[in-house]
Length: 301
Length: 229
Image (cartoon, each protein chain N blue to C red):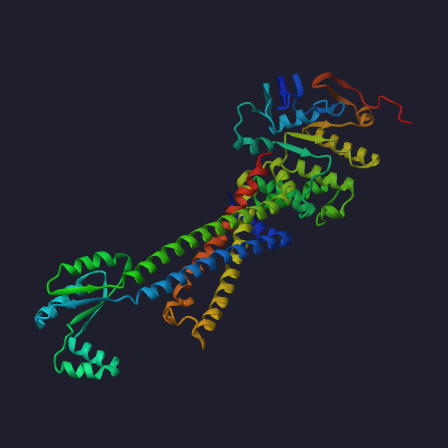
């Protein structure tokens, strides 16, 4: 095809948006709302995962050491713990420190501590935070095989509840997002179908004068892409401003999210690039692909 | 050139639309297709445009064997045919110029040629002063002249006019007929479907009468057969 032909078809696509502005606006709104529904659901799901992750980060496995463990063995054990891929952090907690902390927390038991004198009944320990609590069992099993370990205490009830909660929420959000995607596709398809239906006579005339299917489709395709792209831009702007305002509300002044940790809220800037790409790509893609399916039926003349 | 050999069409509902039709229209002919509603005239046109396929028989149009023509080659066939509809079927969002130029854009003609050729055919149908008007700003006769310009612009071998005078007043009908005759005189084959026997009698030519899916009359008849006073 000549360059002038390509220019004509692209120009026609842009021109059609203006000439059919009411239908184009309807498509734009439907795409915008669909993108917003899916996009916001994904962001909410990501935040809830992050909040659960924040709670999971507070996990603590306490490794009690045998009483006769030497300083070198304590140091070797630290090295061994740090080399484990699922150990995010390991802190030594000496029995002296533990004893002092116990005394400080039990001020009304002064008599008891006096009777103990200098005898410290506690043992040295390591406080370990695991990176992935799904693998906490295997990590504990591996630590148990190490030397000088007296016992291990892990908050298994807490861990199990979190794991279960995360799995259930992941499933719920997967279903919600999948349903929203399907609903959006159906609505987008019907809107483009209505837009194309309004111009079916035009398509028939084009077919009678010998236009190929691609010649007819390209302007519709361009129209769909441009409308979808702008719907993506609109959804992005609403998400960005709306999200930032919501984060500001949750983190400023009130302690709504303090139980999860402020850092569990994802800042928009952290996910800006994938969100921008996803919105624009999804808007453009669905806008364009909708026209392909909607024009197909009318091309069989 | 159109040739149909023993063509029958039976629609899926069992309707026998055409029944063993044999027809040959040579290059340069002007033929009227007449007959009552439901006789099979529209089916005949749909076959020529390969909008439908025959149930049996062979069809040749402008050098194409339609029985063997693949779907993706249909646009090439239709570019050899100009089509004039009863209801004009102009694209309402395009000006007169754009409606006519569109056909040449479809065949990827060079922009300079499009400009020259479109101006020529719009002049030919007498609408040069309305080139920038939209269809809703034209009378019925003017719209049909635009449709004829559109059918003519790609220099087709054949023009099919389906009731081209059906939606316009009698005086304008004669003008449209004269225009089609002048196009025929420069060598374009014209196949015109009509209900208006007065026009057929006035202008004369080859008359193909279809009734109940069969050609019942196919002869050349001279014009002005009746006293129109």
